[in-house]
Every structure is written in structure tokens, then in C-alpha cells.
Length: 153
Image (cartoon, rainbow, N blue to C red; front, side, top):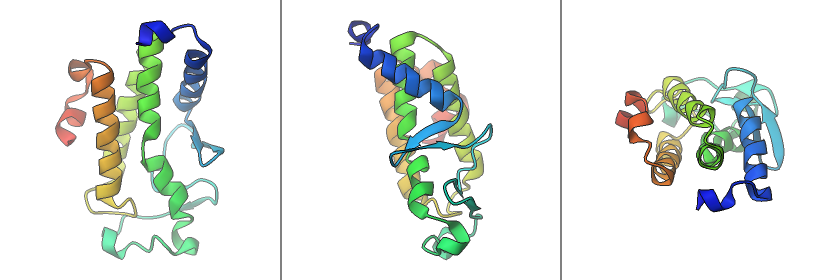
């Protein structure tokens, strides 16, 4: 399927968006969020507010003044862009797309200790798992996945 799409406008658009993601510019909620070189997974980049990592049941995720807009934070943490990076890899063969996906998974795991923060671990972890399954189905990448990623889920 990927071979049939190479060189199409669709493939060009996937690559354009993926190149933005490589630069940490994410299409979220109809906007582009630029996180800079290091992604702060608990930051509302639209309102410049970062939450901490209290026990998740004590996280004031609905208190805008303390954590910003939780929907903005959660949207980045849904990891939908990881599947797009996998698609870009399949369409172009450029390994940097998969490498970035793995770096982001590692970064997310480091930044989000189990049951800490406003990520609602089950929800975000489920989305991350879905992205990993999608990437695995898209291409036999098991040998390419860093061991920590493979064991995380």
C-alpha cells in the first residue's frame, strides 16, 4: 500500500506534517503548537502553564489557573502524531521519523511516572499503546523498537 502512495499529494502532505513534528511543531486542535527542542508533556503550551506530578487523583486538572487547559495537554499526550511519523517512514524510508517516534515514547515514559500528574495514566497509556500497535502493524519494526519501549506495554 505504501508503495502505491509514494509520490502522491497525500504522501507529500504526510511528509510535510511529519517534518513539522520532527521540529516539535504539532498540529493540535486546529492550531500548531511549537514545544521547542524538549517536549514538556505536562505543559499547556497555549496558556504557558505547566502542571506537576502529584498523585493523579490529587491533580487539579480542572483548575485552569494551576494546570492550564487540560484538553490542550491531553491532546498532545494522545500521541496521534506517532502514527503519522510511522506513515511518513513507510512512505519515504527516512529512518529519522521512526527514531523521533521512539525518542518521544522514551521522553513521555520518563516524564510521566505511573499514577502521577494529570495525564490520567490509563487514558494516555492507552493512546500510546494504540500508537505503538499501529506502528507495529504498519511495519515489522519489533527489532527496531528500543527495549524500554517494547517492555513498557
